[in-house]
Each structure stands twice: as structure tokens, then as C-alpha cells.
Image 1 (cartoon, rainbow, N blue to C red):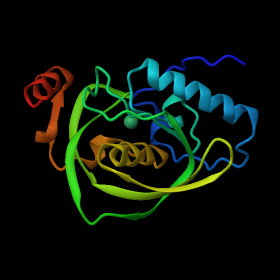
Image 2 (cartoon, protein in one colour):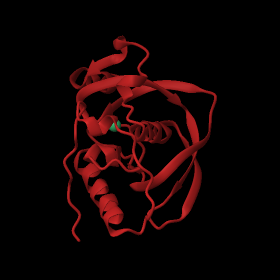
Image 3 (cartoon, rainbow, N blue to C red):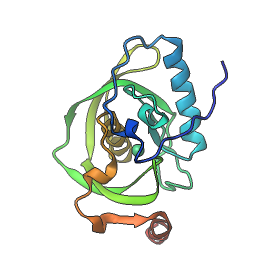
Length: 178
Ligand code: ZN
């Protein structure tokens, strides 16, 4: 079957606040199709990550797809990676704040505190268990998408409303901070 871009639901849609269900059969064709469609969707939308809940399919499936793009000009390059039923095994004691946005919350960026590194375990799309340490921006993407499984969005993690800016102001900030 062909992959297609899926429509992304926005903040206010009740599914974004719903807890996601674990995937039982990764080889299921509907799950494989979902993974393909999520990869197309996150790339087309210039995202660096997406959770299945954002396309109204509340399963524990995320794509981490860091790459430089107009929304995140300084993002590191990596292959889009599907992480299914992931969990955090360990994390750094250090937390840092950096800018995040969300495809489900257009036009807004926030300075979000996250662990600088996380050790994660997940099942890949071939059904193989993977375990690895993620650091910095990629660790941040993972924690952002992982929150979607619990119905949490980045706005819930902000320390202050003063840490919110519009996309337009964010663009000025990143351009000035190179
Ligand atoms: Zn998001």
C-alpha cells in the first residue's frame, strides 16, 4: 500500500489528552502502514518527531526524525526511526531548557526543561528490542513524543508563561543566536 500524509489533530482534540495503548502485534499490517504514514507525515510537516496520537491513533508509536529543517534549523541529521512501546530506563540527573514546538500546537514555542540524556528501550518496526542512550536534542524529541503517550503536551511542562513565544519571535531568536 502507498504511504500517505495523515492529518494532524490540534490541541483541544480529546485524543491528544488520551493515554495511548501499547502495540500488541508489531507485524500487523495496520501498524506497519501507520509507521510508514507517520514518517511521511512528519517529514512533510517539517517536524522532527511525531507520536501516533497526533494523527488520532492513540498507540505507543513514535517517529524520531531529527534533521535540519525550516522549523528547526540546527537539528542534527538522522534516519527517521520508529520507536514502538518505548520506555525510559534511566536518565541523567541534569536537566536543561531549550525551545520546543509541536505540530499539534501551531504558531507557539516554549522553553521546556528536559533530561539532557535518557536511556531508552523500544521495539523497532521489525520487532527487535533496541536499547540506547539518547542525548541532547534527540533525547528532547524522545521525551516530547513520550509525553504524548500520556496525553501531556509541552505547554504542561513549562515553568512559566514567560517561556512562551510565537513562532515569528522564535525565528528571530534562532537567527540571532547562530
Ligand atoms: Zn508534540
